[in-house]
Image (cartoon, rainbow, N blue to C red; front, side, top):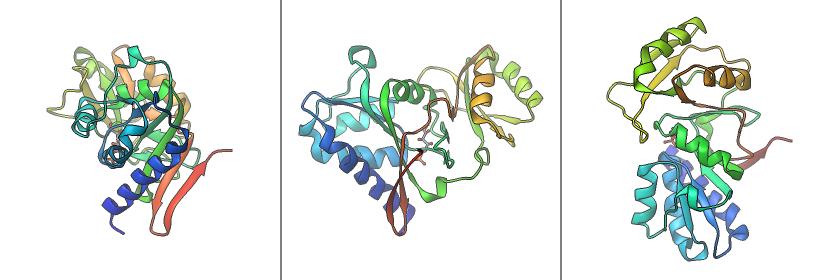
Length: 224
Ligand code: 5RP
């Protein structure tokens, strides 16, 4: 199976997973990226069975609307039952690095407001230790160089993602070569730096379920 076929398989698997729990007034949290897009495309086939979605990016909001799915502001909904999104890396305890698509802040907000985070990924995203994928940090523009210097003190090699402005009007630093042995501690440490909006570690709020696309089919993984 190609990587695209695996992404489509997990997108459909996520719809199958949530469908028995959807009601006419259900609002679903929806992530960003090529795997989340496959979920959105599969969701379109059942769009009359729920009320709509909260999107984690302008791009996902447009794709949802293009499919005829209503998009709600998180301020107008209560907490959500499900958040479905991809990952750049995911480890054995379902901690992730996210933000390759620069949507990490809204992703973290919608994930926090959801009872269940369902990660959809193909097996290329599975790692023993997070950090081979450069860790994205969304920063207030004036803090970019300061935060880069602080990240060097932590042993990382920061690279400014040139030309990218997030949906929130901020910049992204991608941090290479971090030795991430305690993802929760590093997530908290980076959050303390003035000017950091969000970092791409999703460890404090990790996934509850991983729907993993493999050549042998979609596997469901949880942490006990
Ligand atoms: C966007 C993200 C995505 O979930 C992550 O980059 C994975 O994307 P893809 O499914 O295209 O590999 O965090 O900010």
